Structure formats: C-alpha cells, structure tokens
Length: 282
Image 1 (tube, rainbow, N blue to C red):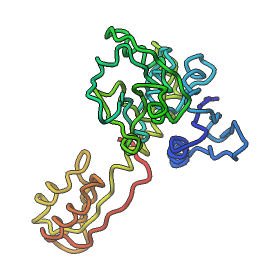
Image 2 (image 1 turned 135 degrees about the vertical axis):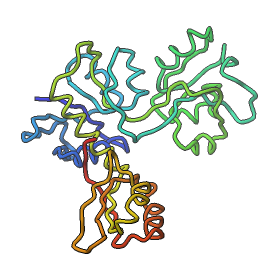
Image 3 (image 1 turned 30 degrees about the horizontal axis):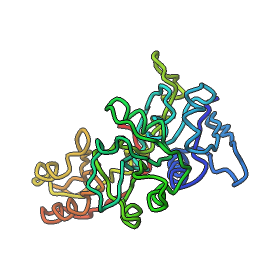
C-alpha cells in the first residue's frame, strides 16, 4: 500500500486535500485523525506537519510527501522532486529594515532570524558570509523591531507582511518554493503505484488549465476555425445533419476561452459552448 504524507494544517493542507479529492482519493480526515486509509485506491494518507514531512519521506518511512520545496531543502537530506503541484508558491528571501542600505554581502557579522537555519547557513557559508543565525519558530518579522536580529530570512508570498513591519527584500531569492510531491532520492526509478499517483495529480492540474470548446461552423470556414482552436493534437470534427456544416470540439486554454469564443462568433460559428474538464491525460 502506498504511504503518502499530507500537510495537516494551513493553506498548503487545504489545497493538497482538494487536489487529492479531485483526483479520486479519499483523504478528508476528521480533525483528530492522523491517518486515513483509502482501500479502493490502495493508499494510506498520513497528516503531518509540513516541516516534518521531508524527514519521514527521506528516511523511507513514507513513500511520498506533499510539502513545500523550501521545507524539503531545509531537511538537508537528498530527495527526488517528482512533480510540482502549482500552489503554495512563495520565495525564500532575506529582508532588512527599509531604511537600511544593505545587500546580502553586508549581512556578514550581523544577526539573522529565521525558521530555516539550515537553509540559511547552506546559502551563506559557500559565499563566505559569516552571520549569527537565530532560530525562531515563527513571526520572524518582529524580531528586528524587538532587537533580536538585524535581518531576517523567511518565506515571502505577497510581501504585505514585510511591508507592514517596515522591511524590504534584499538580493535574489534563496529558493523559489511551491508545493511539490517529493520522494526519497531513488536512482532506479519509482514503482508503478508512485507513477499512477503522480499521473492522477497531473491529470487534475492539467485539466485546471484547459476547457473544452464546442461549436458548429460552416464547412467553408472550418480551416479558419481550426486556426483559432487547434486543440492539443488537432480538433475533433464531425458532420452535422445540416448540409455544409460541421461540429468542432477542441481543448483550449482557460485563460483564453472568452477571447476564443469572441473570435469564433465573429467568424460565423454558432452554438458555441465552453465546458470545464475534470481530469485528463495528455
């Protein structure tokens, strides 16, 4: 049975569980449950703190884990990033007070507060930057105001929290983070169960990017219509019970669907509809 770690709380947990449910897995546990077995799909889900998931996976206790890339690097153990889940996007950055003219090289000899001490040290040491790394479990933004640190290193999404605390980002991001499926650092590939699990999730992620457009078009305009909706390989075309007309079906990007429908209507298409796709394999 495949053993998968899932974040137990927060936005990362909500998005992961939604994705798994859309992929056909039963993984909605009660608030006091730490494990749930999906007998139909032969998977056990374990609800664990996101920061602890890499340790369980890299030790081989669990087969897969859904967590942030930054947390996987913080664990310092070799791992395989099997796929990106396209949520939980963030940057791990250094930040200093807005009134300080500092760059990353200027952090030498200063105090840096962070919840990711290993990640910070692994970034600074090869660059010859010797700083005092102060480990905090959260709310590192306030550490400078309280006199505990001179700079911080933390995960940044919108940047609003930094700005509210009078801080600014310096240098390039240490890590571009997002939710991933991670596994132990295997060199001989992965089991069929792991492959199936990832393919299911990819099917949902891909389906979220596309919609299915269907419309009727005069045969004489078909070539122009296919330029608007080329589909993945090519559109599906079928004759209608109306001489000189055909029905067309094609996948299009969700972000472009309204513009595509406008162009089809202007071309002369009728009965244009767009439908969501629940899952797909490309």
